[in-house]
Length: 227
Image 1: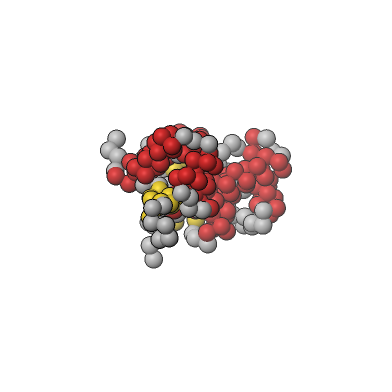
Image 2: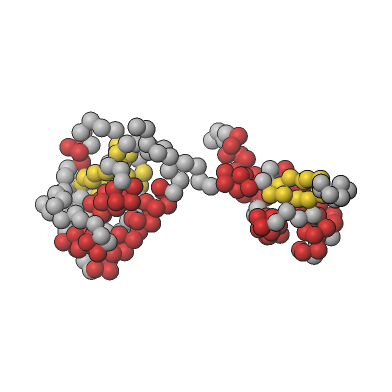
C-alpha cells in the first residue's frame, strides 16, 4: 500500500499521542501555553524525560517553542492546534445521489434513504435485490416515530433504480444484498441486522438509531457535492 505524505503525518501524530503522558501534555496545552519548567512540575517529570516527550511531540508537528517577549531567557511550549484538526477522518467525497440497497427494500434501505435526505437535505433513493411487494408496516411506524414519512414508498428493483442514469454512491445496508452483488470496490457496506426478522418496535427503532449514527458519523467528515 502506498502511503501519501499527509497520511504518514497523521499516523505520526497518532503515534505521538499514544503515550499517556504526551497526551496529557497536549490536553494541558489546549488550555494554556506552558514553559518546560511548568510542565515538568505539573506532571512530575525529570527534565530529561520531559525533553524526550517534547521532542517526540515537536517531531510530530504538534508543538512549537517560543521565546518569551518578556524575559527572553524563558521559553514557552505552544500547541499547533491546526494539527489536531488535521487528525480527523479525511473528508469523504460522495456522489450527488445516494442509493441504499437491501434485499427486500422494505425496511433498512427505505429508512436509510429517508434519514439521509432528512439529515442532509440531499437526494437519495433505495432499492432491493429482490424487492418485496410493500414497505413493512414496522418500518413505516418506526419512521413516523423518528419524524419521517415513508408511508407512500414502494419497493423498487435495483436493476431499474441503478440504471436510471444518474451517478450514485451505492450503500448496501444488509449483508445478504452485499453478498449477492458483484464486488464493487467503490460501494460501501453497512452491516445492519434485519428488524423484520424480529418484528418488534424495539428492533425497528434500533435500526433507525444505527442508521442515523452511521449517517451522522459520515456527514461529519463529508465534502459538499459538486453543484
